[in-house]
Image 1 (spheres, rainbow, N blue to C red):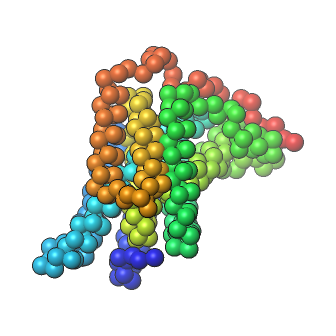
Image 2 (cartoon, rainbow, N blue to C red):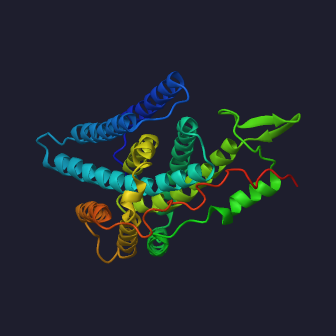
Image 3 (tube, rainbow, N blue to C red):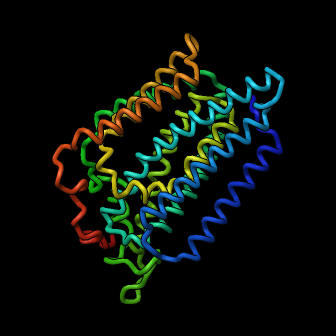
Length: 340
């Protein structure tokens, strides 16, 4: 499979990600457990977005975007548009990811000062999963062209399913993973700081925080399955696929705290995401009949998401005034902790 990624580009990208994670961990450990303010979340969100576009600019320049070679300029422009389109789609899908994280934190009443570390673990899990699944996806596409049709049908189905599920309250009580954990693991009735294990009457048990981490890991898997086919509809270049995914995920933790307080205001965003996924699915299904230009995909994504966000601000959500999640006031572990 052809790629613009040279050893130098891969090395610089890997070094950047490593430094970003080290910096994030350093800041996290230095600050300790604390509630993240909207101001802090906004600053970090802007930092991650700015770094993403700086990287895109460097890539564009490195490929010859400012040179005199017309072929090199065309390649640089194409890859820059692919990166931006992939980044925006993955960022939009990450918003839905954030809302699920919010649901888990609300359900388990995770203290605000503990959420930051849990999200960091979730981000690391998402990065590893995306890298593995991108490598698998790239190999499958290189070996079996027809897999694109499977990805397209899957995205179209996911888009339709997301449309019908939009606006409905999720039932975490019926989640199979949570039910399995309740049956197999003894869970402490309360938190013990940021510990994942604690002792009750001399017996080692897991804390609710550990349960949340496990469920977030499962969410990472589910969203990786949805998002990887979406980016392959934009480009099959492994370098663009991986870099756009990673940059979208790196700002996930800051974006969570930025959106946590205003998630109800964008209640129609799921409909926009559903339309984007359906559009991308159709694009993959007709790829051998008509190849929709990447610029069209970028325009459709931006216009659709912008329209649904603006409509969300003008149209109040149904049942406004109640809690977004009916289990918000429930004790996080009132009915868990049994051991079988």
